[in-house]
Length: 637
Image 1 (tube, helix red, strand yellow):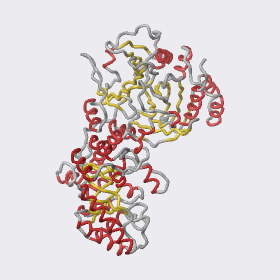
Image 2 (cartoon, rainbow, N blue to C red; image 1 turned 60 degrees about the horizontal axis):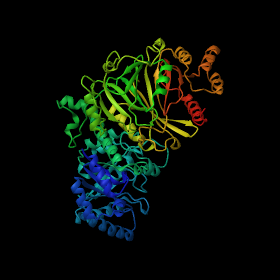
Image 3 (cartoon, rainbow, N blue to C red; image 1 turned 135 degrees about the vertical axis):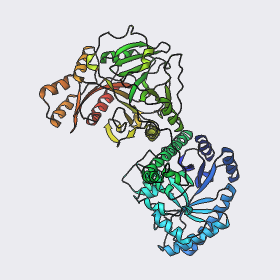
Image 4 (tube, helix red, strand yellow; image 1 turned 180 degrees about the vertical axis):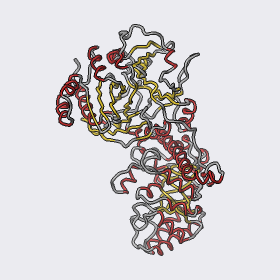
């Protein structure tokens, strides 16, 4: 598949955008008119630079408000088009995007439109240019891609074809199956964009909320499957209007964009295999999609992670973390034989405390380990999806972890899973020394990491969703918004089918994440937490209280409200209040949990799931946010 991207997707100058696209590995670009008009580069210099970078110049765009106009305005539009065709000659470009008229259309007559588009095609032919006519979703008279295609077929000129834009089609819920019947030679260009499903006018939706494939809710694999079945083999190019992307680092955004097309290519191949599989099998062909002109590449196949292997917290001064884990009932398993790290365990829940943080770095979640079937293959897949590799020094006889970096700089390690939940690398740690009280915590014997909550920088939230979907095969659940004293917190759950891995990505209000995502000596400026599931939360909480644990103090008003919401046994309610436990219930089961105080940017949550409860205690989240907000503003003792 030939990959492309419109320069309007990116921040910076035209030169910076072209360089970023080349670094990310795109085959070609669309030049957005404003980027050229405001550039210090001449058309000839742009052409030369593209050649040096190995970038094709695939489309010049947009040419607006051409059709459905009176004759005098048409003559002016043809003059304007001729000037652009001459400019394209200097650029070495041969295709221009012409949008259906929005602002100046006065005459609703398909016959007239076809005649006018024919005159444009004739002029384009004289300049060696092809015109890709696109139906804007908000076009005054032409807003349906099938309508635009009928006009192209009526004109029947070799220099006039259609441009299929997934946003204009899917935002209107048009059926994409008719694409398969299009003459592939008349499909001059294909643009793709994803988007969240929003209830708003389509123009504003398009101009501000498009996202890269895999970061929204459109069925792009199905759209592309129909495009491939039609016989199209030209560029598949991103056209994304997004306020965040145009403010973010240009190279990073370009890499995220390229990742999205790699993911889309694989998903489209899967869609074709699923829908062509029967025919292909019956005819003895390997895969139905290989019958089509466009070849779709796939990535190494990996299964979703089997579970968390470990969580790592990094700090300059680790004393508070050590104390907190000990109070919860974790056992100190010793120090690593060659690295300045400690291992703490409770059941199969493993926490690494990394003492190699820069000076004055407060505790923060630094890394997560996931159990996978084949770490090498999983890492190869992630690297093909443009995930940065995390280097890790190892000595002889030490396990080699495959590491990649997530968009928020959290390090992700792909570990060899064990059927019994153990980890061979734990043998690299010495015996417990001066830490720990040597007392086992039987109530935590079955503990596992239940979920990890990571706060995401605002400019990388959508990128993170795509990263975990494509590289780790996690599936996004519908996002929720939780009120906090500083605004709404957007919460996106990423999880495996069996819920063995649950990752919660939070987009916190801007006031809470100034400089979020920036590495400042390894310090994060927002709160994150690790949740551990146990079988007996009440027993664990009593033991932790006896060890002096500082719980997050829950207001009495919460328990009054809890009594009103649920018919709870008075003794059980008293226990919840006594131990600062929170409670939730649904049709499938019950959920008990409590939170510790925050150390640096990290706190811990202990949970107990009863029955088939599958949530996270969402009704209790505003309480946590409010209490943490209040605690953070209390004067020090």
